[in-house]
Image (tube, rainbow, N blue to C red):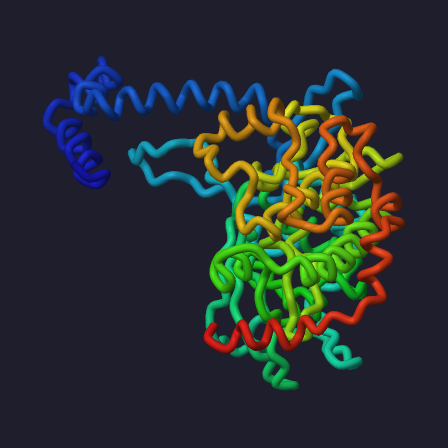
Length: 424
């Protein structure tokens, strides 16, 4: 029965049985309402009573939420103004307000998001939205409409990547689409990804970013187009391990990129071959900083998410909250093992709890003498020490003989890579 039919029947009953309604109008009306509507109405009244204890409405239709805290005094935080829409007569709908969506960076201003708005990283990102820097030129007030879609490149857990062309310059870009309408943690990940790439992309071994664009539902990170990633090189192109001479050359660039993040008090936290991109010249660059963390006194203090479990350091598996950049050194070591062997050391651990148990309790993975040079085996052992105190720091690795040799060694990765990619 519709709301109009219910209203009509109630009015008709009042006209026919005037005396009964006048003496017991409430009982008469209630008898005509279905049990479902009656229960729903009772539930709504209970919710309304609960809301009256949680919110104080003013004449301007804003409300204040009083938050409890064990460490600080309660603070009043005013919400944004919203028009309160009245329900139609006799139409029983839930009084619980719908969740509002955050449609762009300027709308990330509800009470529970004040920590993002006041943060330096959010403000830095917001100031740069809509600005593209290409070939030494700066283009203001840009939007996604200034891009022309060409094709899809890939799909990740937190975004889709497409190849697009900036119409004004015909520059090709890899554009990462990230949803702004997700959970609070997902929105924090978007901000972190944007912040890190905007503040570090000038480094030779971090993917170059042209700028950030937004519309009502998404953020678009515009980056340089790369040839492939090390994960695809291992599993789709070579279908096996990478020759050691190229691995060692890659290590120099990856290590330089990770150390640069450390100097900016940042930690990648998701170091793995799929986040190591190669351009057509064979230069390796780090990408995907959505779960990056901030370091204070070399210890992690802010982070979102965990990264891929296959590459987690033992101290992170043990839920140690005081881990530092040495956790990325472990992930770096697992990635080296995977590059050489063409597989991870835990590929047969199909269940998460088995995988985490092995990372925590098994001896660290090692390469055999027949699988790599003594220098690379030693370098890997320095990365894969389960005791954090024994594990190498970035400055120790940068001083290793292997890195010194291959930093200056001329390795023609470009010709090798382009030959491999002819059929891909």
